[in-house]
Length: 133
Image 1 (tube, rainbow, N blue to C red):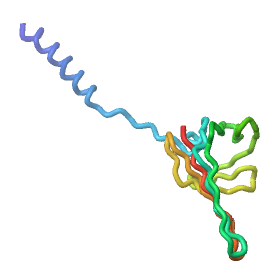
Image 2 (cartoon, rainbow, N blue to C red; image 1 turned 90 degrees about the vertical axis):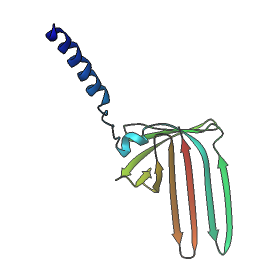
Image 3 (cartoon, helix red, strand yellow; image 1 turned 90 degrees about the horizontal axis):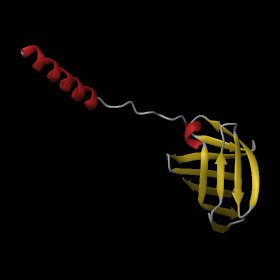
C-alpha cells in the first residue's frame, strides 16, 4: 500500500518542479526587431540655416513603413508608395538607400525611434522619426 501512495506523490512533486521552472526568454536581434510593419507616429525636423531656425512636425496620419527580411523597406504615405533599401550597422544605426544614416534611439517590440543630424559649418538639419506597432 505504501508503494501506491509514493508514486502519485512523486508525480505531483515533479509536476510542481517543472511548472516552477522559468521559461527561456527569447532575445531578438536588431534585424528581427526592425522587421514588420510600423506606423509613423510623427516626423519632427529642425533646420538651422544662416542663423535662422525652422522646425516642423509631420503627424503619421496612417502612414506605414514595412521593413522586410530582404533589406527592403516599403512605405505608404498618403497613398504615395515607395521602396528603399536599408542596412543595419550593428545595433545602433540604420541606413536608407545608402545615404540617409539614422541613429537608432529606441527599438522595442512596439516603439522605433530614429534620429539624424547633418551639419555643414554652422548650419544643420536634424530629424527624429517615431514609429509604433
